Length: 215
Image 1: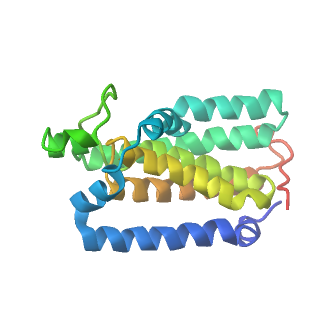
Image 2: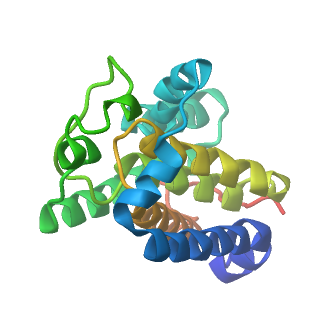
């Protein structure tokens, strides 16, 4: 059985970088406050980047996660990876929804209204409640964590940056505050590690098959 502690230690670049960025962003949030930290990441818009963010944010969409899981399971013949990605999406999504309903918070557009219309992209459909935490960010980090633990570790920074870009897109598009993204990322990391742990623990199960992480 692949021990999760050993896997995490062999991917320290991913996890230490995540911790360092999270600490830095949390300190910035405490110093700048909820509104100013949102405007810091949201206010500078560029036409082509608007287009990119509008579509890239869907990397954190549940349908994207399911699609990746199906591709791994059927096309790439990586059934343990596909199933673990799917379970990480389900578990992170469930945790996000529990927190959202325990703490119903307004989204940026409802908080700021039309006082800063230039920061919101026309044509984007905005939700108004359940801002905390970010489900897209949680899904992206859950998938990134599973992939980096179950595949070759040389892609650690690539996976982290890809997930972080989803989090950035949620603020850029005016859908979430920085705190929503930070907590969403943490939930995704925890669920990703947890699902890989269970994949290794039950590697003999027909649900997971032969799980061997690539060193």
